[in-house]
Length: 316
Image (cartoon, rainbow, N blue to C red; front, top):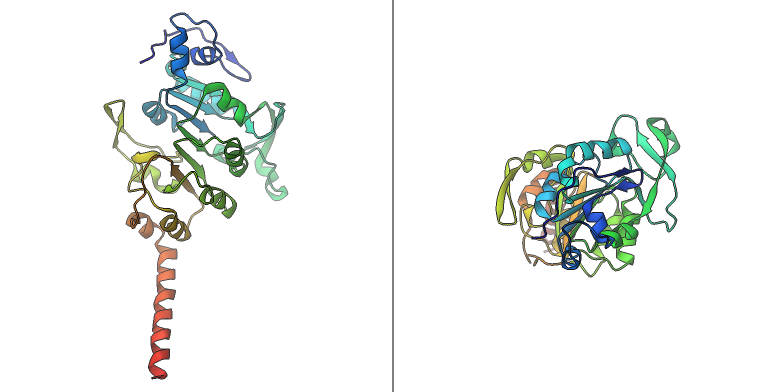
């Protein structure tokens, strides 16, 4: 295990937070580091939390990785994260990047729209004119997503939750041939769904419903480097990823069917390159959670069968 000497006086910059990790990645000399340590760092499990909000997922991600890169545009929320995880930042286990993440080549200040009442609804794309009075336009620094990934190394898992800009970030990552072992993205339209389902690199899928994460994944035991930890996800958090999500991995055909039953837009699609999907598995708990649409389809199918039976009886 790479040991990094704890430093207590780390600097906070407007365009990101300096840490031992950032200096190691930049190949700078750090007390206690070696060339082996610097190269070994790039082989560690790195999680990218894109759209960290107030850091509700970070404690869990720290359990599951060697390094967490938290990217959040809102300076107020970044301050909350740094105050909450001061120790982990100084130890080099967490880096906070205070940027708007974009697909643009030019890292210049851009307009960002902070929601007046709900931080989770803040966004980079300009809101529709009828909703503009709910937002405060703020000029903030930006950084290209690929530049961030190139800076810190290959991702083990990427979580994408950047309000109304998820498709653009996902497309940019795929376009640059970055296919982590695990990734998740908030899916609220068909464009995002098709981008995922048409990608041949991923054939194993799961769904997480954001509205019940804090209830479904309460007081759970999660493993972390041969250590088991009890953890409860707070409301509005993204929840677990990978094999910490209940159930088996779905094949594309079954996943398409499950997705068609959804009755909420607050859904995260999870994909795996490593795990084998089950040919016949469907998560009954999610089917019942989506029961409104499911039973509507079931009822339509039932009526169709009755009509077909009656048709053949009449014609006999």
